Image (cartoon, rainbow, N blue to C red; front, side):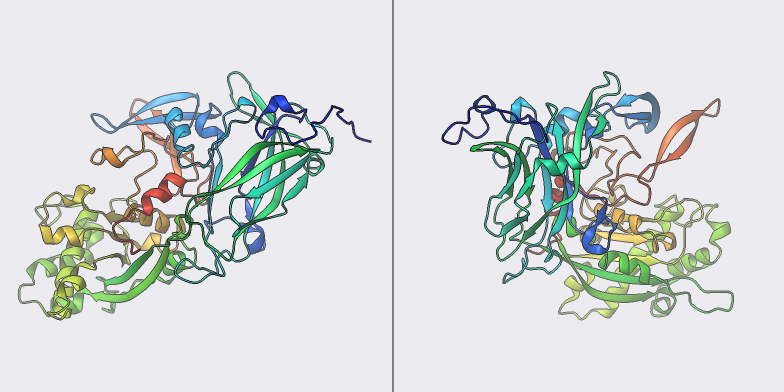
Length: 511
């Protein structure tokens, strides 16, 4: 028989959140994302819904960081060689995770940062309806001890803030947590501060059904014993009554021939599957719509031009790129192989559109207003290991000398090279750039007013805007950087809540 705590319970409910009014055991409850999705036959999480929380290692010295990138005055690297929060400004990051929180709590005077869930509403009328999450999503529940807990009959009670927001089950006995076995995690590698915790996998199912959320909503979590209950946790659920749409145009670029003179067409179907089937923008509650698939045959197009010297030179250069890429680029405004390819494809794609557009809709046709255009280029650069890139006016270095008309053209265009076609992370990464997201580890120099006040160390997170590698050392005397793998390489599937906010402000979206 388990131990019991005896006390004189008040005849009426004590004040919620007042720990002096009860003899409840002290702990907090946190929602966490399962590593595998039960509704997908236990397949790994790949961004099927939005879920974000303040990871311990982002705010506390848990992980050992080798190197740090220095951006001023020139890009360089320096040693860190210590345990440190993965966010270089943890105080600012903590403030960010309290932003938009409804009815913030501080149970037992402990700082509390709720997790965020973003799911579509189902079984409703209108644009906000989606079948994507009509089975809800299963989430783990984590109980962090403040005092050592026992089975005294305490229940965990979950109370959604709106009727269309449903949680199942709504009550979980504390005995179920205890049955999972106690675990311990380090919170500080220097002080060796630890937290004892229990975690129930797929503990609750959360669904938004029969209505939508017109504000960010909450699921409150209470510890209840007898007539006494105290709020010990919270889940924030992202507003989902307004769902923007992103129109996507795909352009297959033909600019190569094989040894027999046959045109080589990019094999981009796997890339399209990553774009559409992975529901890349789902985390930010954005729907994508494939509005056009187009082939841009540069060999055919060159025959339609009266002045064709530049394009002919480019196509000859492409045919001999193994040799030519290492020599001088035949263009006065660019000095790299990749920039040359991007500029010529962009310039002549615009001309290609002008030729094919009617005079009535020429402007919208040329500039693809309110849409994202993605180019598939079926070759890889010789001089750079690059999967793709994004032109995103006005925050892109490639757009220093463009006309007003070209500004529209460059508003949001992605290029994917051959190696990206089967790389889901590369596809998502460039799409993030198109939605105005910067690298997680790089402070943008040209839009400080709209940027967050924190940076992460390169190569340590699961964020899509991080890199799958990190720098671990310098070789002396050459001072050459040595790379290691990000532990989340090939599993970088997360956008964070503050990135959802920014993506949803993109000028390309239609509301």
